[in-house]
Image (spheres, helix red, strand yellow):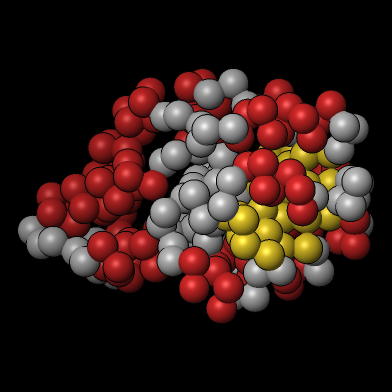
Length: 211
């Protein structure tokens, strides 16, 4: 195996949550600000900073209200979550091969638990780094380095798999091999390559081949 340790982003990489994130952003903006937001503006924010920081871009004076309305809309939608086709088979195979797996997400732990309640994925992962666990979030290296610390791994033996430029930039800053996946459909492939991904893959089977 090339990489004994493999880290994954959550939204858009393991779980098919892009549509519900977009819907909740639109709902919050329409409810609180009485306006529509361009999809490009929303997608550009997804995957990096905290929800509060993202809402500050929309209206710095109404962050708390935007966050509350977003979560009220978003949390019930987790009951409908699905993993991307082939993803659970992939992580099961990696574990069977003896690799150490981790998740690095900008979500808070409470929201991650909603996802795990719908999808039994947590058992495959030795570390789950959420937004509360580091002072700085993606695209800074801190969350990736925290996951490596928890897994007792070194950057040179690890890969980070994600669907956003923030994942790629975080992984590169941490010194790990970065793999961009296209199936999240939130960020354009060109943007992932511009962020410096070492490789771009289109299916879980293709991903297995580069790990």
